[in-house]
Image (tube, rainbow, N blue to C red; front, side):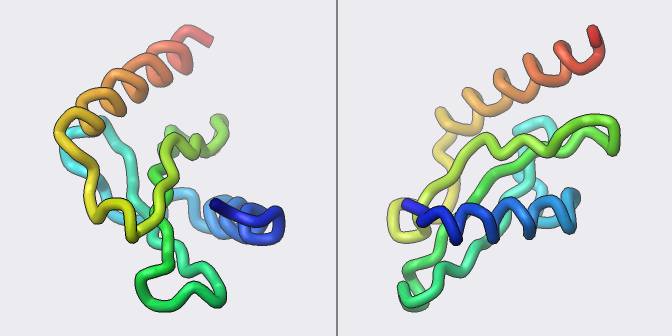
Length: 95
């Protein structure tokens, strides 16, 4: 979905503002960020779902999708991502 240059731009954007984006209800702290993709028009953007636990941890990019595919996560995706977040947080506490 992303070219190497686009991927690098997304990573830089997330690193610059790890707490950016809107909180996604029911996911344990995930945030949804909007990404404009050059040359793809208004509907050609993407969304990246991230998790930031604090300065001592990396920012986790857990889900990426094209805006044209879906606007929001399905209830099943939300539940699956909550399980993932719970596991990541448990691992972080254990380390």
